[in-house]
Image 1 (cartoon, rainbow, N blue to C red):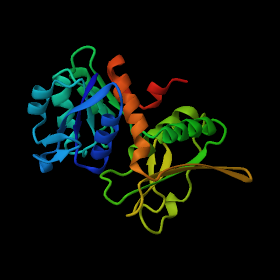
Image 2 (cartoon, rainbow, N blue to C red; image 1 turned 180 degrees about the horizontal axis):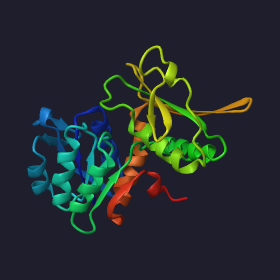
Image 3 (cartoon, rainbow, N blue to C red; image 1 turned 90 degrees about the vertical axis):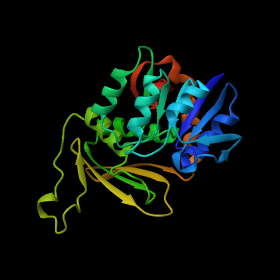
Image 4 (tube, rainbow, N blue to C red; image 1 turned 90 degrees about the horizontal axis):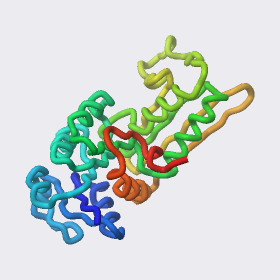
Length: 256
């Protein structure tokens, strides 16, 4: 039985994680942490406010974190120092910080981070990298709900990185020199232009738009409900114990 502790348990993603893990065989939620909701009951688990105390009391194998960029680093430090594997869906931490955190963990402990846990989003990124080999002119449009804490999204950053690794040339991104309003052409990440949209009513969406001579190619993924992320979270909880060090991207657990 894999013993799971969930941080940010009372949030929208945290509640879905608690429900998904509780419904799976071979794993159970042994503690839930959310300082703003301490004492509340969630799916039969009483939420606590202190992560260190919760780990000491529940002896978990895996921590799942969907919190906020301002608190996730501290949560990871506490969990890894206790030898608890981490499955992290909170984006916003630079890779240098993640590398440092993983290096401080006891040998055999894993820090697993995924910018997106939806299987379709992983496939979208894989297809985009393949297309970039043949169509190097590309821009990314990512759309999320208006309470998302970071922009661009972790998924967009990961997609840009995969595209940069795949394509053999970097074409010019014209229009920046004639912007009438600063930022109209978006942000440039790994020489890939990213546009971020934040609106109520959205969940998580991304379109990768390629252009070529006389043609365009659009690869799009839409998460219309947060349950779309749960199969990936469950997969990560099952597999993180077989990994060690820093592992980034759900594709690392999905095989070929």
